[in-house]
Length: 224
Image 1 (tube, one colour):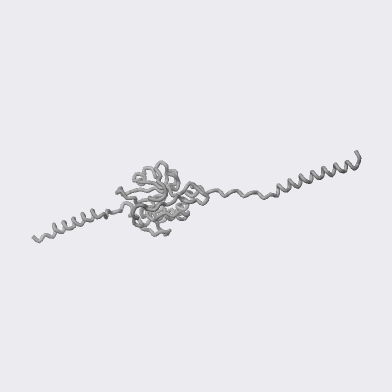
Image 2 (image 1 turned 135 degrees about the vertical axis):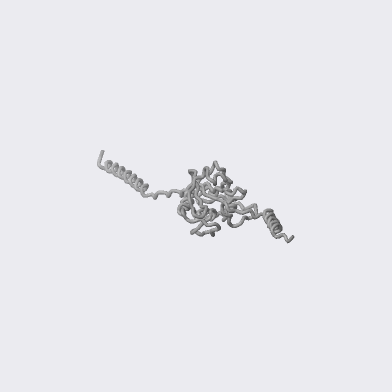
């Protein structure tokens, strides 16, 4: 083989090698593709709600506490506040809160679900708590106790359980909540009566009390 042919073959090999080197280095310089944003799961939203509640443990209980007040809470102002801190708007009273989201059975409770009870056993919901999982609820009740964590099974709130509602959706990149249906019943008062202190103010009971008063007056103020 003469020198001319050797030179030609050498140039060809060098050209191929150079092309391969350029291609390899180019592939190394390609910017990595950003990963898609992970969706906000229901569990992460529930965890954030519960974490917000835990920060308030020990805050005193006060019936009729104003919305947004963080110095004192009643049961429904507490739940409203911690959900609101996570972008979920729910009504003020426990009766109103029991109408939003979707119904959940006691056996299907998940972290972040709202649990409602009728501690007076008079047919009117008067308490709401947040289920934490592990048979625990976080809530507030009674002066001297305030925001606390309680066992659920066998408790007063379990024995007087009425319903549970799920207001956190199953996910979505924006963590949106389950649509809130418009109330189909007349609106309840802004706040519920204190647990174990609710009085019957129905017209029939009022009439009975008034009649009793007149009878008492007649029997103790007889001019004859």
